[in-house]
Length: 112
Image (cartoon, rainbow, N blue to C red; front, side, top):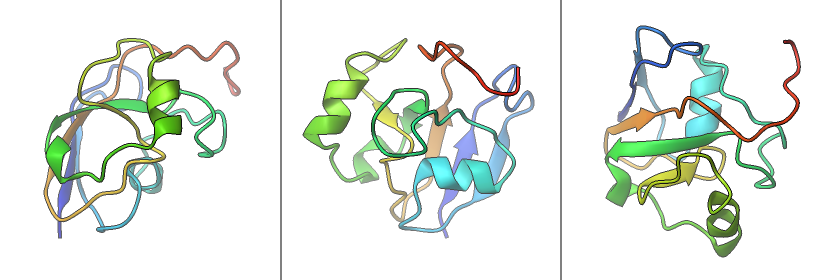
């Protein structure tokens, strides 16, 4: 079973976390199911960039991004070559190390 290793994020995961992940699940669903409240303003429909993550290790194990995802990623804060929308990236069989960027371009954040 692959592991999803989340690097520390000041608000969402201050200590970082190692999660036993299921192949075929999205990074976003895996994070949410394990108490990491990553933003997903469009309810995981590939219509925003609030669930943007940077895959530091294991990027090549992911299926290629779609054209729609690439178009949205162009608008993400802190875009890097290994950036993905966590609602679209499905975990394969390799461990992933991800970083959740400090900021999103979400103008409205519920619960705050």
